[in-house]
Image 1 (cartoon, each protein chain N blue to C red):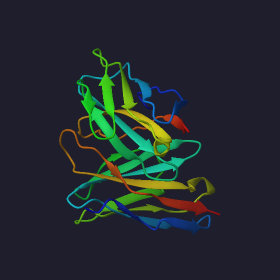
Image 2 (cartoon, one colour):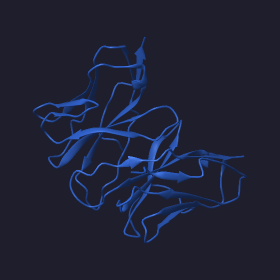
Image 3 (spheres, rainbow over the protein chains, first blue to last red):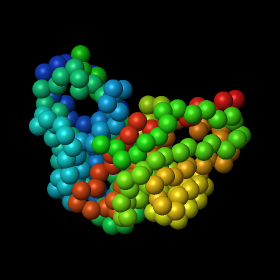
Image 4 (cartoon, rainbow over the protein chains, first blue to last red):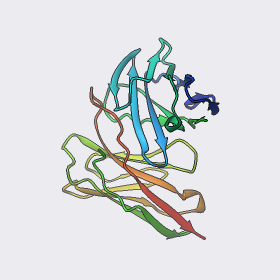
Length: 114
Length: 112
């Protein structure tokens, strides 16, 4: 079956703009998590959605937001982009609440802010 | 903060077994040990996980000490394609506070 799909793969934005990234989870998966990866900070958890509700949130400013649709697809939005937001943004999907669920990651969206 | 400690880098000769250690001395009774790896510029890939018994799948084996304070990921016959950053993570069986906290990982170099 198809894996986790993230679009676009690459993006260049200007400081001050906003950006929306998309994630389509594996069919049947209801949980979607987002991560930011930078060389300096490594992989950092942004937030997780399950059944269209945000269940968990990392330590990021309010400029970072997300949502999940009824088909489990998720989007994350970053407003008022800063140079430091340049990163690889990764989405992971999993079945959802229950024991022993592993997360499957997409290839990521590489965002460059200039 | 990550609850695991891993060596920053390791080398392994191609064809040999790669043994990657991980310390998780504060692990709780309901926390699983998960391993992921990330090949350059790709998303992390799930490898294996376990609670207290040793586990094996087609990719690797996971050895967890009896006190569960440390574990070892074993890649039985390392190939050049196994060059990646390997992350050891402890994670509660999914609940309200579940999130994957990644540490710095171990950069594994497979030498030809």
